[in-house]
Length: 279
Image 1 (spheres, rainbow, N blue to C red):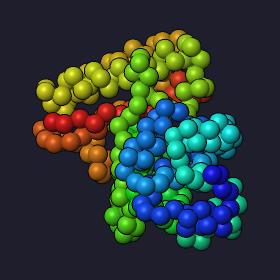
Image 2 (image 1 turned 30 degrees about the vertical axis):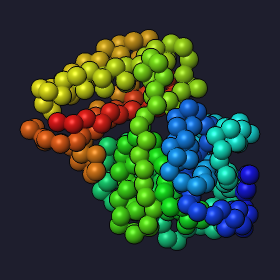
Image 3 (image 1 turned 120 degrees about the vertical axis):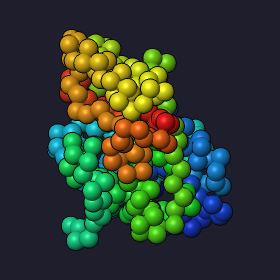
C-alpha cells in the first residue's frame, strides 16, 4: 500500500496490529535497502518504509535536484519484500509551513561529515524526528554505511526520549567491494574503477589494526593518494578514525571500538564509506 498524505498514513498505521519496524529512505532503493527491509521484517509484525528526498539535508540545490527519484521502482521493491505501507509524502506534506522549531545536532553534527556538509545533520535529524512522530514505530533500521548519521540518530533518540529502538545493519557491498549507494548509478566505468580506492583503503586500514591507531591511518592513506593520480582522480574530503558514538578522533593507544571513515569525490559524485574496527 502506498500512501502520500499524513491522514492516509495515520489510517494505514492504525490498521497495523502488533509491532511496527520503520525503514526511512530517500528512495532509489538498492540491495542495501532490501537488507534493511528484510532485517526489519524479521524483527516486527509489519514494516513501514518512507520514500522522501529531504531538502533540509542538501547543501547544494543542484545536488538535491540531481538525486534520483524512482518511486514506481521503489514501490515494486517494497511490494516484493513484503512491506505493509510505503509512505511517500510531498515536501508540502512534511513541511506545510516554514519551520520555527527544528533539531540541532550540536558538535556531533559539525565534525567530520558535518564539517564537509554544514547543516546536513540538523536537516537529517529534523526529518527523522518528524517521521518518527508520523509513523510511530517500535524500531527503526539504518545502514552502517552512514556511520555518523547512525551515531547522531542514536543520540537524538536518547536525548529526546523518543522511545524508538535504533537497529544498525551492516553495509552491503558489491563483489568488488564498493559499498552500495544510490549515487553509484552516476559513476562512469572509469569513475567506478577509481572509486574502488575507498573500500581498498578501508580494508588496508583494517589489516593494520594489530599495529595500533597510527598504523591504520598510515596504511589507508597511501591507497587514497595513489587514486588521486588516477584518471579520473579521486578527490579526498577526509579519512578519519573516530569514536563510533561521538565521532571524536580516537587517541593513540585507543582500545575498544572505532570507525574508519572516508569521503571523496570522483567526477561529480561524492561517496562515503566506513568500516567498524575493534582495537
